[in-house]
Image (cartoon, rainbow, N blue to C red; front, top):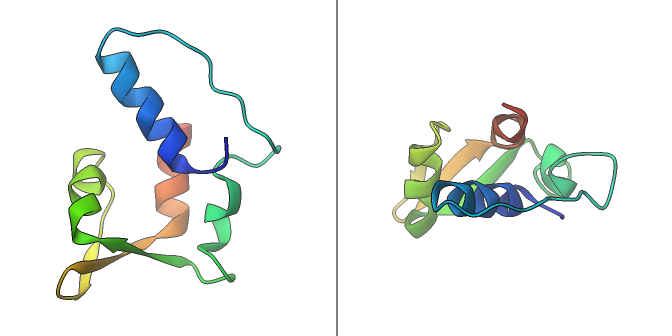
Length: 81
């Protein structure tokens, strides 16, 4: 696994009644998300994906039309809860 997308996918599968195992490739959960990419602590999320952040209670603010900013640490920490 490399990113929170795998954890979110696992969550959706579990809600659908499926079982399985998730394995991290590295010791750090979330892959490169801790730094947000190029060591920035914010990630840019397209509008189509914002509903996923909303569903999981992850805060995002509108950056410009169709794009949102979210804290990379908050996004990864959700995986641990």
